[in-house]
Image: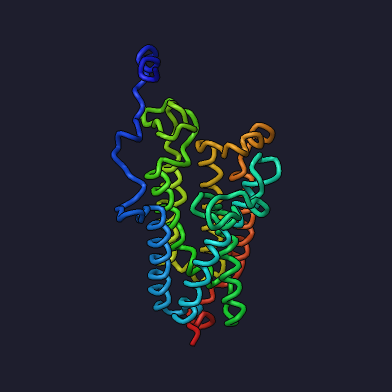
Length: 303
């Protein structure tokens, strides 16, 4: 039916996701599947650890390798716990039509509390970001490190995780975009998406929130003295991520349980959560630009 309608209107036939030959997992052994989404998390964390460790070898680094080792553990924990708690807080309960994951014990199997059933889906980027900030704050306070400078050394590697995560979403055929007739529009296999061509918004997010922001931050870190202005890199990251997410939400299909929010306010939950990100980033960048370059003396590496 879709092809007949397209032919009668002279429109270009959409791309069918199912024709791309993709699978949500790399390989399968019995009941075990190594899923690309899990690999995205793993590779993203490994890249962040590698890049941060490499950055610490530069003059004026704000912490030692042992601090990076602690951050590796606590930030990973923060991503998982923050992402799950953020999803439960922002995307379940209230007017969403979905029982709050904090109080829903209706799940099947050995674990019946929905909050713990992460394999059923449901992670929030904004919640994960809060979890990472809390983890960094914990490590910096415990070791008496400069919070903003530590954030500056971590921020450049974070978009890699966003890039890989959104590519994994596309590979899974999930989190599709809004209905569209652009030449690259795709029909996704999930029955909830319908036989309707949509924006491949996962790729838009991978490009803007991931690749573009990654290139900008790496260039700022390695080719300029931005890392010597406490807060500048993390401020640029925060503004860039907030703006990219706000823009991409115009192409991404709103979460079904929060569709009424878009109708009532004109903005999705992702956009509302991105507004404080952008404002916070602006404040941090202004703060950083009004402070002196700390150079290599004041930012000497911790022992």
